[in-house]
Length: 395
Image 1: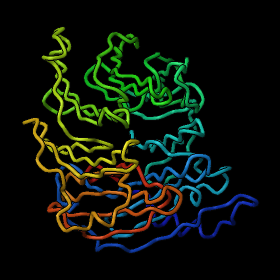
Image 2: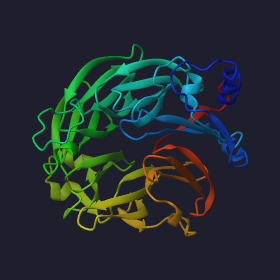
Image 3: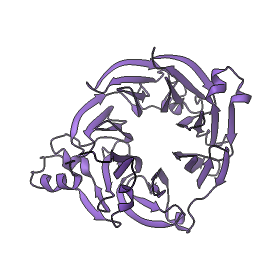
Image 4: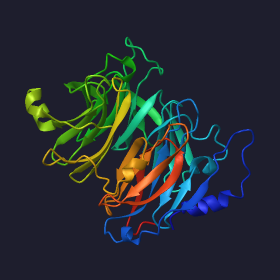
């Protein structure tokens, strides 16, 4: 029988708290009725999802939450409680979270590490040490992690290029590195290639503008694709396209969404033939089928304000479907949207609110028609989601 996260919490109540180290108290909050429809699919059950809260930089307040579809309960602050002997708990700035096999990987940026946990219980299995690590993906038994490599430092003449680390998931050891551009952020794996969005985010106003392409078998950089300034997000669709977001320069060059035809890139075509752009700002997105759900919190140093939108793009047609998928007016309650995910079965839309970046955030759940179903308090700066699913019949 599979391990129960709820049961783990009850058992750990018998443990004494670690001394002289703050523990973020766990809480279990009922927020919705159990969702039995998620157990009807032939292919997998969605048991719940994890939400990684970043915590403000320098505060050592990254935390991990879990939502349980079977009970409709939201579990706050589970890592410290599941791992009472781990110093400083999860660490400083949670930047990404993924599941591979039976392991849960949390990328903790400013703590220069990846916490590896059991995916059912969040109990710590080990640690991968990578400086200024950012995002993680997996392929054939290896983890690939982007690293800024150098220190957190705003410097237009920053000299340290970033890299992608290749990690053996059996030993948690970095076995190779491939140098890419400056301050690489998200990465995507398509076939035998890794695509890396280089931001140059520390080098204002001299941002990067390329996607690096790594050949996996040789683990060497083979190409640079020029796109736009200050790249961030990457996602491949099922039509052979790579969707890339640019944050712009926060002045005259706005944030935009770009679509790259990978076959045309391989054929050596000019950018005018392999790349399209859509006039929509993007901070974060989630691809569900042919629908790219996104939000933008576009800051301007000219107006000294954010412009916020919630959009959907049809990736098959390369068209903007809507610039606001929230249909009941409750988007007015969200101060700073910061994370987004869509349930592939129910089409519920999850959006997080970072509020003022230093206090508890909020997770909102909207149904497929854009009407709010529920909301719940989270940790500080709720940001990164991953579903916990298992094959039907798995024990």
